Amino acid sequence: MTTKKALSNLLLGFVLVSIGFAIGKETALNGARKTRASEVAAATPPAGSDKVIVYYMHQTFRCVTCNQIEAMTGELIRTDFAKELQDGRIEWKKVNFQEDENLAKRYNVASSTVVVVRLRNGKEIGHQSLDEVWMLSSNREEFIKYVSGAIREALAKEKA
Image 1: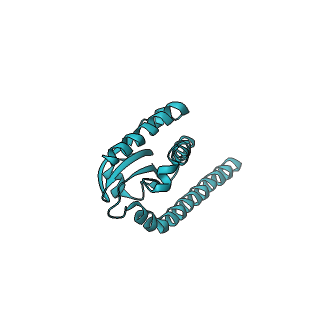
Image 2 (image 1 turned 180 degrees about the vertical axis):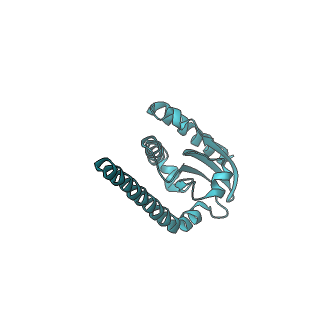
Image 3 (image 1 turned 90 degrees about the horizontal axis):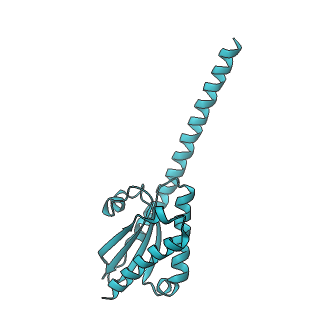
């Protein structure tokens, strides 16, 4: 009888934890959906603009490495590209690609990554997915060199 009662309590606990997780996930998704419209509007560049947009495309739930990639990329842009950021030649955007299927399809994004997009007159003229950020995330110097190189290349092409 005691084993049966313990098993019943264990199963009941599992069900309650599963329900709690599902409710928490749905609540997070609903909150994200409310801000999605403003994020999508922010992701649409104004006509007549020449610039480089650096996206950090992430999933709803992020791991330590995902957060590290975002932090290192954001810090790089705020420090090494501060003038371009202030001048509006670079934009830094964090986007949940799971909530924006069109953006994910456009850049063929299946996992968190950095994407550098070049715009001329408000229209995309090219992009580069920086998929190696995952392999380089544990080597800060190589990571910065890789991401910085891609941004500098895009800026040089944006001027041309």
